Amino acid sequence: MIRIAVIDDEPLARSGVIASLARHEDVQVVGEYADGEAALAGLPQCRPDVLILDIQMPGKTGFDLLAEV
Image: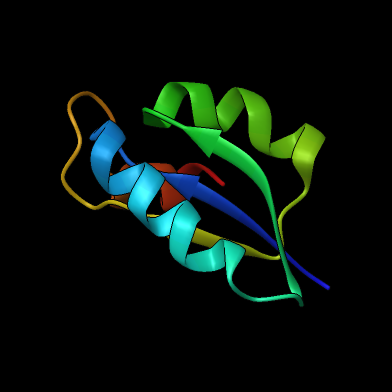
């Protein structure tokens, strides 16, 4: 099972990615975050194998988040 967290500030984009991932039996979405700060707080608890990450977000960009993870 691949554990995935989805981080995107646009709710429609985030839900579209999650809906696409739901079609795969070997994937589990373990986290969903609307911004970099929330992701930083939640990622240690959900412990994903993969991040699907929006690059352009207000506040922390995707690259900022990666640097801190």
